[in-house]
Amino acid sequence: MGRFAAALRAPGLGAIAEVKRRSPSAGDLRPDADPATLARSFEDAGAAAVSILVDERFSGSWDDLRAARATTSLPLLAKGFFSTRADLETARAAGADAVLLLLRDLDDPPAAELLSNEGLDFLVEAHDAHELARAIALGAEVIGLNARDLGTFTIDRKAQLDLVAGAPRDRVIVAESGVEHRAHAAAAELAGADAVLVGSALMRAPDPASKLAELLRRPFVKVCGLTREEDVAVAAEAGADLAGFVLAESPRRADAPLPVPESLLSVGVFVGAAEDVGTDLVQLYAEDNGHRARDGVLFRDGEAVAQVLDLPWLEEDEAHLERAAEAEGRILLAGGLGPENVRVAIERVQPWAVDASRSLEAAPGIKDHDKVRAFVEAAR
Image 1 (spheres, one colour):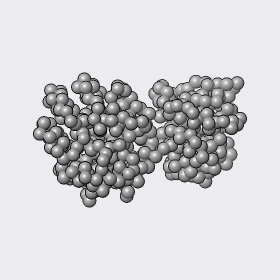
Image 2 (cartoon, rainbow, N blue to C red):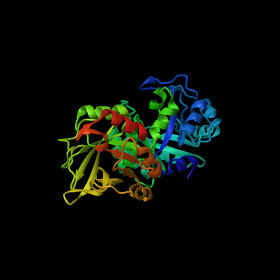
Image 3 (cartoon, rainbow, N blue to C red):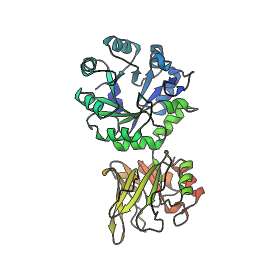
Image 4 (cartoon, rainbow, N blue to C red):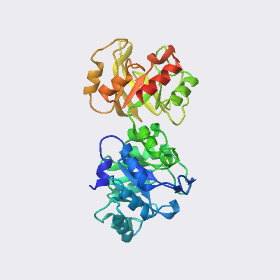
């Protein structure tokens, strides 16, 4: 395993930050982008690797790769349309640790010949189930699954996430394109991606490195017990990542999940048994004496993806945070969290996500908008 693949294998969701001056689908993005400055700032912001467009159709060049190599120690991906051994030699000489191979443009024999070259890693890109099967059969170690159709330039995140979820876990899986919000990163991670490749969203941002840091910052923030569209809107505006709808007997029960903007993942909360109500995720508690059990499980398409660690029903537990801090795996921390204590809880537990409901209310099922904003700000 080379440096590029190893960096993406690190715990948690990694990010390949891309330097891209223009896009055939979007036109000019950041014509004055300086790859040397951006590569260094992306390293400081927590990127696992940096992708450099070297093709002139993206206003890129091999000199851009050389400039980035001079300023960062991160693995560099040369991104272009490569088909010959000479392309690989040029990439290696310019400082690349990995190169992109597009299965759309390569038949299996030439792809296999390129993959046999030592000294470089390869990001083998697939766009559909057939190309994913080809990448697997070719023995690709790092597989990129692109949400963008390179023929029509349309983004289909659902199709991408289905491919990510079906990819073998012994490969490094990269979700490419369409990651603009933290919720998109969360969705890719929960589907099974090891990393995301982010380009256009960074290049459009006033400060690309700050945008990258925002996408990588943890924990995610869930506002639960939502019953009104105006409360969903405030949660989104405040910067929350997950919107929870209680679909069990509760003073804050919602008749049905409400629509959410693309910056939020929707979560249906159930007790005893879950129903398919079209939410992105399901949070399920067992039933205990007519109420929810203490802890629950977060599911994506029927697969458990996180533990929900909560307080006992209407009770306190002084050891709650200590217990959560000792738990392993992906943790969604709930129970008694509010603007005044969530930062302490985050520092002690380091959870994947934090969850608040009753503490953010003006009345059961009615959110206090100032409290929602304060909670998200404190958690972020």
